[in-house]
Image 1 (spheres, rainbow, N blue to C red):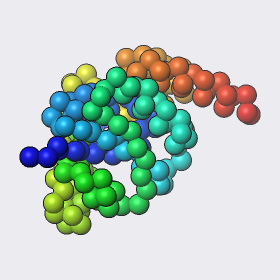
Image 2 (image 1 turned 90 degrees about the vertical axis):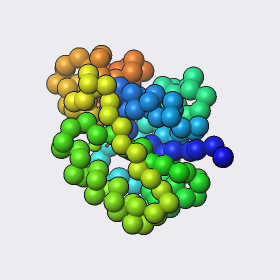
Image 3 (image 1 turned 45 degrees about the vertical axis):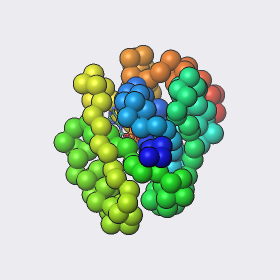
Amino acid sequence: MSDVLAIYPGSFDPITNGHFDLIERSRRIFDHLIVALLTNAEKEPLFSVEERVGMLREVTRNMKNVSVDTFSGLLVDYAVQKKARALVRGIRAFSDYEYELRMALMNRKLEPRLETIFLMPAESYAYVSSRLVKEIFRHGGSVKELVPPVVEARLRQKVNSLRHEV
Ligand SMILES: Nc1ncnc2c1ncn2[C@@H]1O[C@H](COP(=O)(O)OP(=O)(O)OP(=O)(O)O)[C@@H](O)[C@H]1O
Ligand SMILES: [Mg+2]
């Protein structure tokens, strides 16, 4: 049987320990994992695509079967182009479930050969989201336990540079 490739899509603005936890779990299941950053998300990101890719690459540097890429447009088109067999998504709480279920069923309708796999993070990361990390950091709280060290450093730089702009 050929190698099984999975794609873990998201906006990763920035990558958190919750994302990291899912990457670690996925790469033990699949032969290869592509962490794929969606570049046409509608929301206004804090970090540019280049900055987000840079952080993802640093954090996954020692993971031989993980690569980082970007995509725009439909996820299923990208997945087919990459010959992926599965999509990885995370379920933190019931609140994620409805949206993720809708997305998974829609993606299945668009591309029946592609399977969505849901993973649960370690309990300690069940409440971590990029949005929450940014909010805590903006108000001076500690994000040390929520993001990889490189991300904490970049957040500090980012907030300092934004302060100097105004
Ligand atoms: N702490 C976490 N545990 C498990 N899954 C997660 C966690 N954080 C994100 N995910 C999952 O990773 C995928 C990509 O998520 P996304 O890029 O939206 O991150 P996010 O942290 O939810 O960001 P935002 O707060 O901007 O929505 C989604 O399936 C999401 O449910
Ligand atoms: Mg989200």
